[in-house]
Image 1 (cartoon, rainbow, N blue to C red):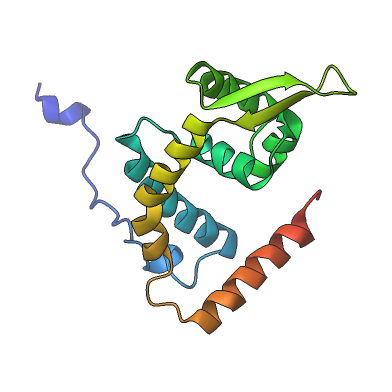
Image 2: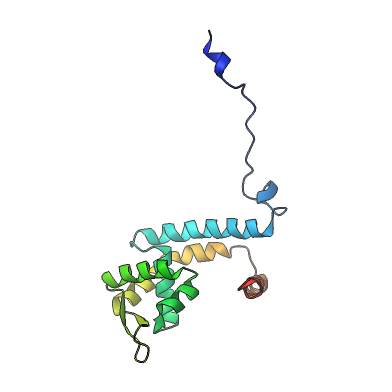
Length: 164
């Protein structure tokens, strides 16, 4: 008995479209296209940060702490688009690395105030420099006027869908 009898007949493999083709192109669902763009950008950002041992969520947390000092863990989770549980792990790791410090809130003892340290600020400066090419690539070929439109649209989408 031939071993070919047990095999399924071969069918021509379907071709998966490249980015920009088929449903991965302008005719694709807008939510999918947003996710596709986000994934491509995230990969570039992660690659830019990896040599300094900084993850993208850690970079996001340090960025938000620099912009919004004395934030609580819950506030940082909302700002960084992470769950409170994930935020707790990230802040713990950053605290062990002496990039952030925690202390109880003056009035609400259960709330922890998180602050970026001098070492955290220095790492953030290096991180921002490292991701600059990824940020520049994100807007390559986009005019300043179109960038304003895109930024406004993205904010409107987030505001409209927030809490849905």
